[in-house]
Length: 472
Image 1 (cartoon, rainbow, N blue to C red):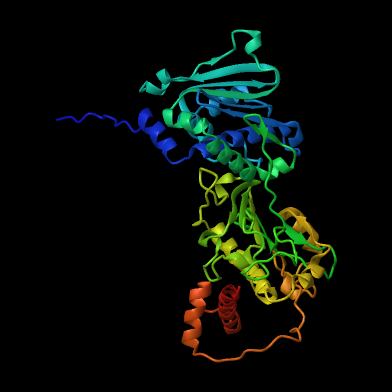
Image 2: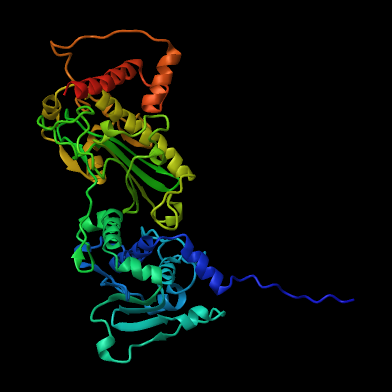
């Protein structure tokens, strides 16, 4: 009996592909994906030069009836639309952005966002003087075949875009999506997400509006004194696996050294709503995470868990690479790939910088704020890049090292120390077994190896707070 040489189909069904593609992304992340495409367009338009972001805008409108996003970031070239823009995924040999620091990796962002929202999407774009549009409707989505999408020229001059850019309108929204888009709380969530994720672009002049309201950036900064003997943050910079990693850890601007500000958790409690305390993670200028205070970024993993004493500490880490696949970020662009080697190696230095300032807050918490303020009087808030530039002349890296490092513990004046005990102070000394000290240290700091003096001081502080409350 002769066997036939049959073949087996190995392509995904359209319904399965669309359903699974949209399941793992939130609605606000889908909107951020579309903004990312606008920024990628501005980068390509600059053709290797610095982007003048102040000349660009992105306007978003949300309602129960439709979603729209409009930009003036150069539009989609026709050949890109034909070959790539509407393709479900990116070919391995697609090298369009090989020399551009974008964050797109898999070529699904725009399509996934449109499929997430509704069943009727019109993409209208102008590149140079060429205006055309692509329509994705329910008929195409319901069709089992992966038929090609028609590229059409608008039927009338009034429908053509007045300047190079792209406008996307999504109608026939899914019921849940329509409810979100008409909900003021959700609109506020999207605004916050934009102010965080695109803060670097907003600070450079990019204008993003949502329902006519301009989005303002959140500023993530550390304090730096320009004096050679002034206080400065921990800084580290090194290229790891083809990714430029830049780190700074220091004091943020949330704490004003105001002696009239009364709190019960020590001199460093400060403003309890500081969004930028903790770690901010940037990938090619996009803020993947802002103000993380969890084990993800090292808190409670070999160092104490985050608590109010550390509200003045801010860490910023940035990963830069022209090959976006090397960045430790997932396809949603708002979550980290913590299994990547570049992340794991960087985390070691992140913790090192945190220990510097955790120790600093422990040293100063029982001393007058005015004494601290005198050291920081000329310090200015700076972004990551400016902080590195400011302290680079004071680097403490070992000779022959391929890393730039500044450790304020090794430079006189860079890490202010409190003066000796005040005349009214009393020294308390007692001994407990090492096992007992480790047990209490673990309970208080989630770290069995905290110094005994710090453990004892924290125990006294807790009881003092209770005594003050009882006597009030």
